[in-house]
Length: 565
Image 1: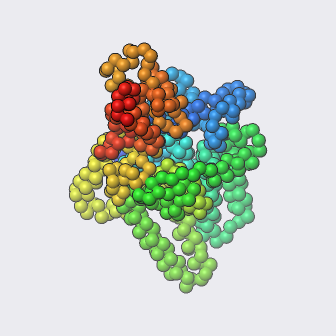
Image 2: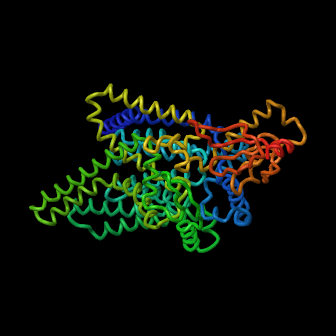
Image 3: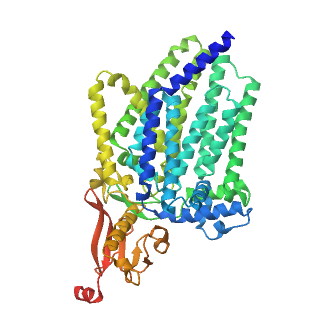
């Protein structure tokens, strides 16, 4: 009985410590505030170019399952490249949309935001495992104040779910490999999480590499402790790795119809090759120069992150890099100091030290390996760096490690440090509020801010400002009672290959037009402007920091147009 009471008392103490952990309380409060703000403003965000197709993909993928795998409409009437993405998120969104809880577009943005926020929430335990207290909280703060990431959480239909699943998969791998011999429960969870990542985008297969590296480090720890690796241990490790692979692929096949209509490995290879060699070539601005999507400089991704991550994020990453160099130097010194004890003992000591850092090493791999692979593969990349949006949370963890290294110095002058941090992050929040709902165009001071980066980078590549301009125009015409006229005015929104698909974003009885010569009103976003060639009058702009991101034109009467010409 005393032993039971002691054990119960310890468990209660641990529960209280967890409940009153300042970092956890702060993280929950911050994430809750972000959820309230995000959900209450989701209706403000524009319907983006890829969302038109994703919104079509979801209901038809859902029909594939509900029809008993007989309704093939999502293979026949949806843009073919969408087959190569797993539809689980779009399927889930389609189901929630079918409940008629609100506007269809707003529901989609809410779902995308919640999935992305769930991925960011996983940074708290990842930070604890990788670097200790305050690392996860710092990473969450950095992610939520990075305009490029926060704004994308609402309307990036493929890359945000992939960010979430990759973050969850990385966490699952880290939890599974904390002990030298993984338990079966975390092993099963790791299989499900990595399978979900694969079922979102082909790049999720890289999580198997993270797991393999972490399990090798588990073996290094076992070797250092036992001075050998028994055959039974190796068999158990192989069984666990094999179980993760098997569960992951069963999960992916179950959630991804493309893998169900043929040999799953062959089907996966087709999708993987397609995205490794996207046949799309066009030029766009990058640091003031014109570059081609299929001939990017090897520095493209790092240079884009250098422009889009906030200054504090970059500074803390630099601190983390210096800390890593110091840790490498210390590791080498320790290894050399044990050399006099014999090569075998020295090797065991080095293996033990390295294995003890496997949490942060997994994060380093998750932040760097995908980028390195894309650079070496010379992959086609465009639309900023949305394709690697999933590495930003991992970079935030590394930056959080840089923050943890600064804590002893910050404690020497807590008030000035708090005032400086408060002023800096306050200015970031003001900037994001000013940009709303175009937060994702935020650029740091190195790129000249939004004002200086305009025209030198792809900013509003999703044409979010087009929907903002549309809402302004609808309110204006409501005020002028133009919608009371018959017939309703015609509208052209210049979205490449989507001009005829704008029905979901219209809130008034517009007539959809695709010919700029016939449209009563034309909305021309920054990236895909259709020049009215003097036959229309500029009546409105959506501008941020003095830079226009969408223009609204009204067609001139024929007589006026002729006299102007």
